[in-house]
Image 1 (cartoon, one colour):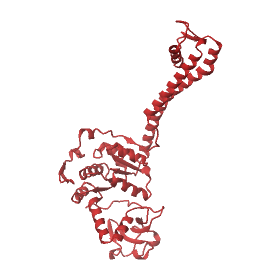
Image 2 (cartoon, rainbow, N blue to C red; image 1 turned 180 degrees about the vertical axis):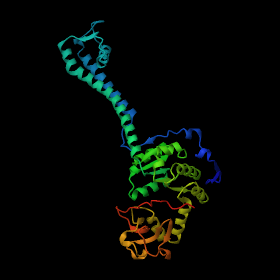
Image 3 (cartoon, helix red, strand yellow; image 1 turned 90 degrees about the vertical axis):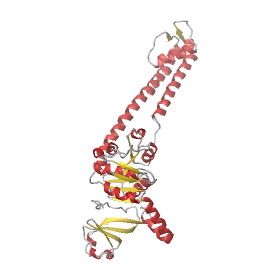
Image 4 (tube, rainbow, N blue to C red; image 1 turned 45 degrees about the vertical axis):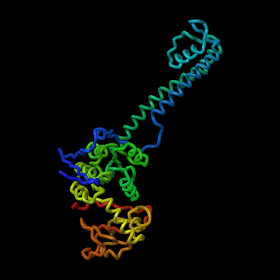
Length: 380
């Protein structure tokens, strides 16, 4: 049983029942959130508004038809009282446009019959197109959306799942995308409908629901994901999400964020490959900026991908093999050898090997990319 420290000082017991952890603090309404998948799409008019517009158009056609009949009412015969008033005109327009045609009101003059041929009949066709077209469009849209969803699921492989699309999650996915990841390869999971709408508007696929539930993560295809970013608002939620995600995917790289530093070991035990303490990291950057504002600006520049200087991890090329870290053109910060991260001045490095990976500082450019390590570093 885990005891997760909250920011407010309380603890949460999270028993691992049947292998799937559950967040006991969720309300019944939160558990009943619609766990649907939303794919990014162009901004279109709402379906109800479209239907209302079609109905309004059909009503205008009906009114226009009735006015045409009423204007030429002398050319029509009513079997009931031999006269056609405004009510009769609307009645005739209704039964005519709907193709019912009772025959109690009929055009008898040549002008009335010509009007029926050249005006009423086209209006009848237009009326049917509006109503039938609306139904067909709704059915087509639903079929197309189902087809898009099935194609999306079948094509989604080695993608990135982002749990929590707040400030941390949004910044994390923007940083990853700045290094070459396509937006089509990102799936956002969040319980808020507004947040999911914002994510899809940015071009990401979204799954609305509680990420501590395995069925929600399965909708995001977590079991086929390459990397998972866990950035919810609460530390206890982060632990539950990490436990569930690790059980569904044993090989994915999981990076999680926590507020309280004392909860970081729990996340590593839950299966996180790397844990970032957001409050402590921000505090250290503040302290560094106090001691040296310029150094703080450099660190901020380094962690902001796509501008200024970037930290880049890349493999050793053949021309660099056999050389020392200081002998190559790039500014090497560390050398990744196997599961070890060695400083550039570590004597155990000796010369670079083709199996090594370098963490270097380079000038940001559109072609700059970080090549992910095929295997995550060992967890403590």
